[in-house]
Amino acid sequence: MENKKQITEIQKICLIGEKNCGKSTLVHKFLTGKFEELRATIGGFAQRKIPFGSIEVEIQIWDTYDQERFGKLAPMYYRGARAILVVFDITKYDTFLKADQWLKDSIENNSNPHIILIGNKSDLEFERKVETTEAEEYAKKVNAIYFETSSKNGQNVKEIFIEAAKFTLIDLEKNPEKVKMKDNEEMELKIYDPKIEKKSCCF
Ligand SMILES: Nc1nc2c(ncn2[C@@H]2O[C@H](COP(=O)(O)OP(=O)(O)OP(=O)(O)O)[C@@H](O)[C@H]2O)c(=O)[nH]1
Ligand SMILES: [Mg+2]
Image (cartoon, rainbow, N blue to C red; front, top):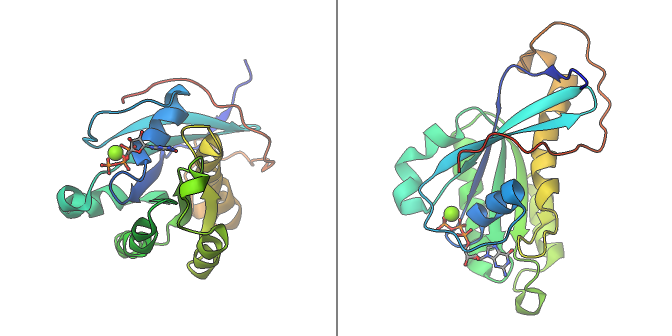
């Protein structure tokens, strides 16, 4: 097997957003390929290695739960996150409005995280209350990338985690001192279509 170069630091990725917008289900779909009803979220993380050509990025995905319980723990979750995935439900406009507060809180508790805004439940098109263009405009304003996802039909589920991992390579290219490597060899920063490795899970 090809020996992949590794980035020493595990890359923390954090999912936040209103209750029931589908954060845990997105993580579960990514890890298992299945869309299933889950028990209440108790918080936690899972790790996955994502290969990009000769470089391997190990991500640690942190799932969070409602603001009331989670509020006090927020700084601990956000600290050191490379990327924050702000999730809302396209069928509930208030979850889109509240995404703004989630985003502000996360920025307050972290230095310059990369933000991905996620409009989830895109399979419920007939119940849509948030237009794609409105979400895209908001994302542009806050310097985020926008994706629409569905854990039910799998739309963009892998892509959001791959995109989150890619931020590490972008930082490595722009600010190499920000990313710790296992050796000092020069890296070839080509981005290939990654294959997701199925390994180590703690969910
Ligand atoms: N149709 C549809 N339903 C979804 C999708 N994702 C999640 N759901 C459903 O939405 C409900 C809430 O999903 P969860 O993943 O538990 O939501 P959460 O954001 O983790 O909620 P908290 O942990 O309470 O903050 C469940 O009934 C899921 O089955 C989706 O993409 N499409
Ligand atoms: Mg949850």
